[in-house]
Amino acid sequence: MSSTLDSHPRAKRPRKDEAVEVVRSKIWYPDGTVVLQAESTQFRVYGGFLAARSTVFRDMFAVGQAPSGEDCEVDGAPLVDLYDDKAADVEQLLDALYDWNFSKAPQKSFAQVSAMWRLGKKYGFDDLRNDAQQRLEACYPPTLAAYRKHQLGVKTSTLVEPVIGYVGMWVDAVKLARETGLLSILPAALYLSTNKTSQRDIHEEILHGVSAPDGQRFQLSEGDKAVCILATFELIKRQWEGPYKWVTGGWALHSAGSYKCTGNYKCREVFDTAKSCLGGLIPDVDPLGPTIRGATGLCAACLENVTAVVRKEEEKLWQDLPGIYGLPSWDEINKEMERISGPAST
Ligand SMILES: [Zn+2]
Image (cartoon, rainbow, N blue to C red; front, top):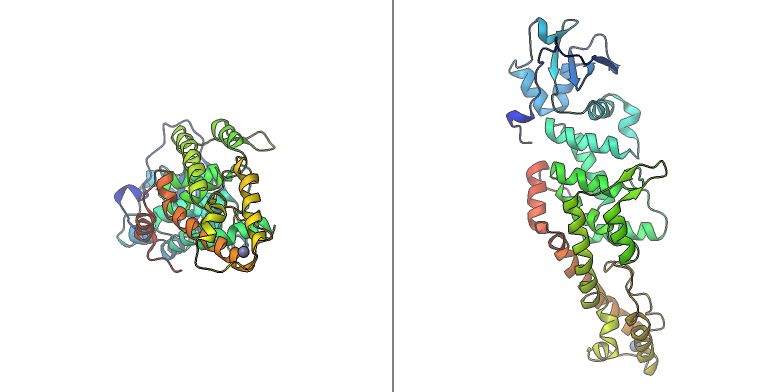
């Protein structure tokens, strides 16, 4: 946890002249020992409990930085100004700390997880930050092995993500990652935003955003719109040169291998048919998707060879994925995540 001065809460600024009415949150323990204020909402909680969970609050209370004086108190409790945090985020954070049912819930909303990550990182609530990171990485995996498992769950409709999904969550995830340095989820979040349907639909969705049933619209930043659109062209190119090589290379690629085809001319026909069918189409922009479809009817040796070719190309593509979106390499991303939260546990 890096605790810069900027990340510390500070003594409450007097707000006598301010017209905004201060309101009390539902999180208000009458015998609490400290009052937090975010925007115009106040929360009365226990300072010792915050200090036990947060390195920043622990330091603040330990060295006597807690504010004092009439202007800095509410009903005798010191007032701490969380001056650039959103009240909704602070409420989610305190719910995560104080509400047992909340903390044990197998699925949390994106707003809850986002607040746990954002404020957990800022104030050193390490367990909440780690929980949030794990949940978000389960939705947007930072390794190819985890991504494959995730997609298998999607394909078989058995996927239960630890974050309650909604239309446009990927947009919010990309924005959160950009704002807070959660680089580990960015490659998959950006990839999953550009691998859905046809190239035309992808560009439509990226350029104009997506709408929830209630009319709420989700749009990437202008910078990320450009990044995603340029990436689709690169993905299409990589798709043909990489995982679809088993089709474009055809029988010549496979018959040149050292394995022994046991299907004689039948396998050759399968390769030729796949090439003539897929070669004339523009497939989904999804080079990490089910690119082996069409291989039905191959002998076991040919299928094994095709699978090996595709897997090897997927590995190469995954390594290059951050670069396709203008991000640092996986090695650099992993180093940055270790700097924030310590070495990965997996
Ligand atoms: Zn064969």
